[in-house]
Image 1: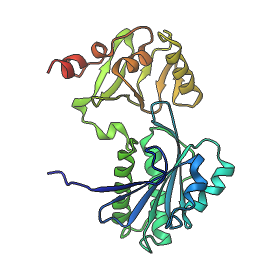
Image 2: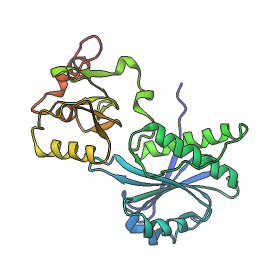
Image 3: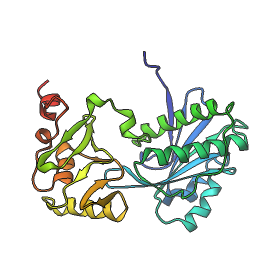
Image 4: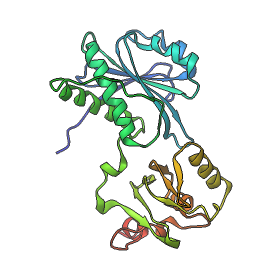
Amino acid sequence: MAISKKLEIIYHNGQPDGIRSIRRHLSTMTTYVIPRPLLSEARKISGIARPGIYYLISENDDNKIVQIYIGQTRNGVARLDDHNRSKDFWTKAIMFLADSKTFSLDMISGLEAFAIAKAHEANRYKVENTVNPKYEIDEYDLPLIEEVYDEIRFIMATQGYKMENTKLSVNEADTLHTTRNGVVAFGVYDGEHFEVLEGSEIDMTRKGRNSVVDQQRESAIKNGDMIEKDGKYYLTISMSFSSPSSASGFVLGGSTNGWTEWKNKEGKTLDELFRQK
């Protein structure tokens, strides 16, 4: 049986996309979501100078993370001043700050190292941390760090950000595929978004049916999200699309109907699996 969770959210400037603080019932950690243009305003919030870790993120037009940087802070939002001067890519900061002395310095360093390792492992977005912290997590601290990270992952999910590797979070039975023209690609559909999985082949011999697809492909190659190997192109990360057809259009080019292109291992189309139930 699933456990209910209660969240309390404060919208500090009265706007849903403005500064907000989020707290889970009985938690000792508070989350602050801070759009970069409102950084100076965030400094005025009481209690925001506490220690913890933070994510700097950049999103695409579908509000999916494309770039991310993870760091630690001992003085809360003041740490972001350095990044405001030195890092151009980020548009939003999400800070996870501990109440009182819940996080020791060792705990913060361990949590930062664990979160960076998870971000690289997920392979969903470009991670701006080029070097993992050389910090060994004590076996007695690891359960608490994992517990805190699970809460971070949950809070991020409530904001629309998936942190885990898609291939590790879906059952093989849920995986869909297309093999048209000999191109083998895999994906999963959650009823709202379609995710083309890492390792899928992209048919670059056919242009997209519109300029948007071609721009997405060019951007993926430029960012290293798609690479060429032996004359074929493959995704190095999982990519999210707003519909099955936009996903199949990116993979196959031309005009496609994702509801009939994507099939499960029994050969049933996505249309049969979702629309004809």
